[in-house]
Image (cartoon, rainbow, N blue to C red; front, side):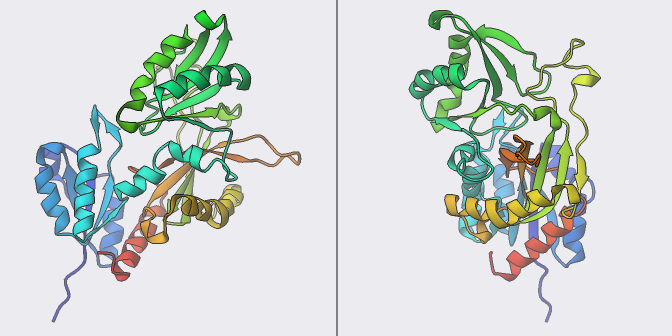
Length: 351
């Protein structure tokens, strides 16, 4: 008697043609497909779009587990319908990583406020309504220096702004603003007008998180890749978001972010951060959010900026955001780690 191979569905967004032509070999996740196959797990593409969501639902219900790579915002589309579908699938048996409920705890900017008391935190503030934003933000900007505002859910720098006060009377207060989305140019605008333009971020129960700007931003960002509760690699990148573009404009070579240099989990330069993530910050975050190991995403990352150096000259790290919805590209070591975690969840009976 033979036992059927466990089946995993790998979900990403695409159109009908992409769904029809997708194979385990012709997509950016091919190394993950290879690693799953190598340990006896059948993985199949499950390209998603709202136009054929019923087909995808039926496909996912026939799987033992589901791995999802879909951004919160893409070409004007959100994950609203997909998240409802994934909740339905997970309630019917297959496990889903990352589960939409986990994303709403980990993969939103509100986590920066909820965990600000951890070692990765800063003087973060949360605005849940237009009224509180109007009342509290102007004074904070006047007294605390440049701030970074972030809408609760987004990607690619959408809804992330550096705001710096330029003075003026309360009735005509001016600010310098720069959007984190690639190609953005800095502007001088009235504070009241800028704040009015942010009000859409509160739609549907949204919120805005307010953090201090980190002066060491030009030193780059460290992306710490996590497989559940263990580090599976790092990426270091010199970024240009929230740094004014050079005189030749936002499309010039000097204005583009540098390549992300990938490193394995044992990279010497990041061992302090690895220890903090594995032994302190991740367990503490799980406690704050009410998560257990089984509900952690199989792959997620935490983006860190360099904070102020200590008196001894050592680096500190400030959490910039956590990515859960769609974590890619990934270090070379990550596909094997992902496959191993999938196998462990199947063995544990998380159907």
